[in-house]
Every structure is written in C-alpha cells, then in structure tokens.
Amino acid sequence: MKVELVRVDDAFHFEAVGTAGTVNHMDANVDIGGHNLGARPMEMLLMGLGGCTAIDVILILKKQRQVIEDLRISVDGERVKIEGTEMSPFRKINIHFAFKGQLDQAKVERAIQLSMEKYCSATAQFSPTAEITHTLSIN
View 1 (cartoon, rainbow, N blue to C red):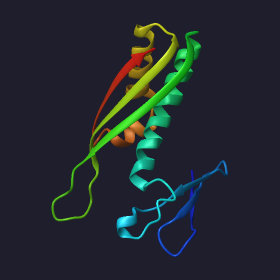
View 2: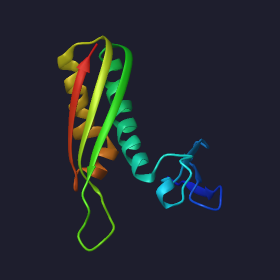
View 3: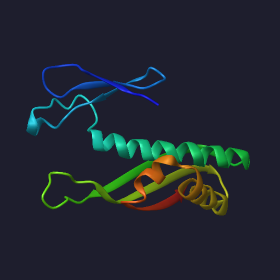
View 4: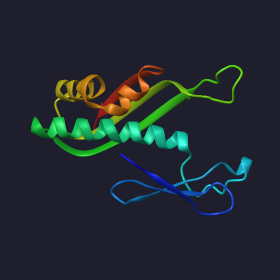
C-alpha cells in the first residue's frame, strides 16, 4: 500500500492520493496558517477507522441477509498529550453505529464485535494504545 501527498499551496493544504487514484484533501487549522481546505490528519485517522469497520459490518450483515437502509457512523476520539512532547495520540475512541433497516439487533451486535475483534485492521492499529468502545442504535 502506498499513498502520495502533493502540496497544493504555500501553507499546509495537501492532496493525498491512494492506490485507487482518489484524491483526499488535508489541511491545517487557520490558527497555524492553514485554510480549512481539508480534513486534519488526525481526523483522517478516525475516518479510516470508521470506514474500515463499516465495510466489515456491512459485509457481515449482507451475508446474513440483513436489510440495511442506512448506516451512519460517528467516531469520537479523545487525545492525551505525551509529557515532554507535542504529540497527542488517541487514548479513547468511541464508534457509534446508527442503523436504519430491517435488522436483528443480536446480528448487528455480533457483526460489530467480529469487526472489532477479528477483521478491522484499523482497529488492530489503534487498539494497543487506545481503548476502543462502540455503541449502536437501530432505526
């Protein structure tokens, strides 16, 4: 896997391109000279986690013939500064799955559990250093 970043302006706006060729924009906060023309890098990490587990959950539920009319995911991350540095990694992350459809709650809970414990590589990336929890609602 490889991504490339290309600086777009004289500040912090970048276009990031992945292997599929799609472009994602990243930028910094205006407080440090950015222009709010893209997501922050740490936001993109949470987006990746949400997307990774969403794909797993949808695949699992489709195999179980569950009808998903809509799925919205919100990912909240709490960062803690490492003493003596400017680094603030995520230490707590909650993923909320909001489903709409003809769904068996037990099957949805099991699909999420399987994603978190067996399939989602982004979860595996975060779990050694962050506590990851999840909540869900249906309809």
